[in-house]
Amino acid sequence: MVTPDSWMILPFALLLGAIAVAPLIAPGWWLRHYPKVALGLGAVTLGYYVFILRNPASLAHAAHEYVSFIALVGSLYVVSGGIHLGVKGPAAPLTNVLFLLTGAVIANLLGTTGAAMLLIRPWIRMNQYRVTTHHIVFFIFIVANVGGCLTPIGDPPLFLGYLQGVPFWWVAEHCWPMWAVGIGCLLAMFYVVDKINYARAPRPVGEPATATGSWRFDGLPNLFFLAVILVAVFLKQPPYLREILMVAAAAGSYFTTRPAVHAANHFDFHPIWEVAILFAGIFATMMPALDWLNQNAPRLLGADPAPGLFFWGTGVLSSALDNAPTYLGFLSALFGVTGAADITGLLAAHSHSVLAISVGAVFFGAATYIGNGPNFMVKAIAGQQQVPTPTFFGFIFKFTLPFLFPVLLLVWRLFFYD
Image (cartoon, rainbow, N blue to C red; front, side, top):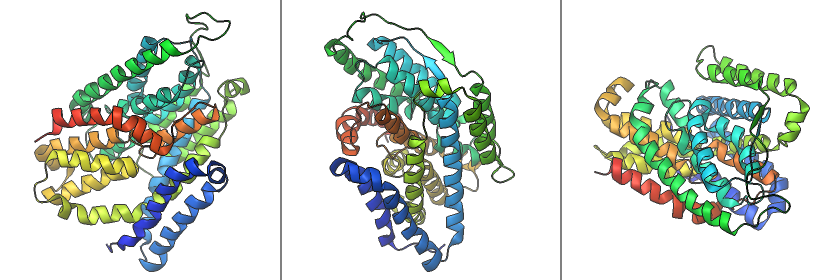
């Protein structure tokens, strides 16, 4: 395969820079023009692959991954938008901790996308009178990322590993200690921050400090459509049957859900539309970066890389690239440096390195808005409901570095340090 020129990574860097800086310095301009920026930079890369490299195979592969990604994310968004959870509020810190823990468990059954889309609106409602940035960011950390580390359904990188031949229960068997440490530390941090916020926040006028409202579930038929999506995830043949079933489930959900449920959820298509456009640009422009990684990772990693190198390498790039293709890139690099013939041989001799790649991809996906698909969707829904969210750099400097990074450092020191 012909390696792209290194300068073709520039469109990807420009897109990431625009996503990071433009909403901060020119929010109105970005809201109007982000489709042109994302799709325009993506078109530059596509043109390069078509007319210069003459490599349609890479385009077809990236297009299939994008369609699968959007079909899964979009269908879960639509179906979860037809489910309305009534919650008690205002919520005390301990109630919030239990809610996030429940979300972390559910993420392994519905995927981080499904769990995030199902729970973000009730999460905002139960904290409505005092909801702020830390509620949104820790929700992204726990429900939209780290929580989904126990099954291949939980997070897209692990599902790709399952498609490569990693046994279904291998993930739960090997990842649960990292999951327990990560979730436990993040919940403890959240409890401290939320307790301070709870003490300082003014009580809502006319309401007691104790909980009001009741727990209830509207939109029960959508559980059937969720089941269809989850079954479709495991279908490999014929091509695109999986995506067709997901889209059909989304359409069935949308047209059979009562308008009152959509109204209660403030449901519209803007968040998924924004994600679809931005990730179209990301999937296109990151092709040269991933191709370069696949070609050069064995040389950069050396002959016998330690698991910690895979943990940090996969993790850091997962926070800048989408974590699913980054997982595949480092898994390919591991095959290259070990000479393993198949996934069975790789797991037999280098299971700890595969584990490091898996945990690194999932945990570091929480480090930025673009690390994992649900992150942007949670941000978009929060913004839609006028909940404050940090900027791209604010997310990193105010939350990732002081809260998430110590957890990542601890996980590395306990499980991948050599």
